[in-house]
Image 1 (cartoon, rainbow, N blue to C red):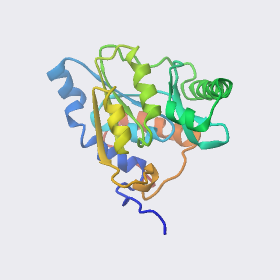
Image 2: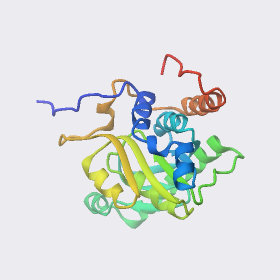
Image 3: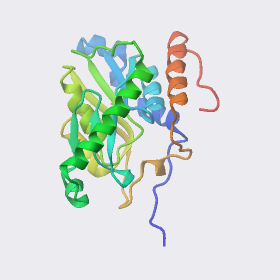
Length: 240
């Protein structure tokens, strides 16, 4: 017998971003500027977090950028991870997973090195010669398409603290209960549309249409955000 699965509640990542944005109205740029004297930056973790973050940034009329972080895959099982690395080199390890997998320090260092190389590749590819958006003194909303273990988000939040934002809000369409608890310890606030209630948790189960995003789709989403920000009344293309 197959384990029970969650009922999908999002059409795709763009729909998830729009549903998530509806819960973030208090952070809409003009309102925040008047009430709290600050501004908002939405930072998306690529690749899956980019469509989500784009929709949130558009709805909040906020600035939008990427923050690159990656899970550290197990040596013989790339689908599973034992921690994460952020783009400033911050490393968070899942000590329980490290012990369970019997990883040596050499194996850990090798996997971390490979992830850092991939982060560097993505940073050069996506950012090219553009400097990262300034976040000092601002409200930072970090988005992804969901939290499973939460370690990628933990590394991202820890990294972002060094850039001195006014506050860090983690906003995701869906999260496991355990990740929600752990991320809630390091973020100023966590906003989510749904929390997994079944023993088996998979972010993909909450989406009717799910696929791994390639670099081309990330570029299209970034260009779409630029075009729609200039023309705020334009609509998302039908295939989204």
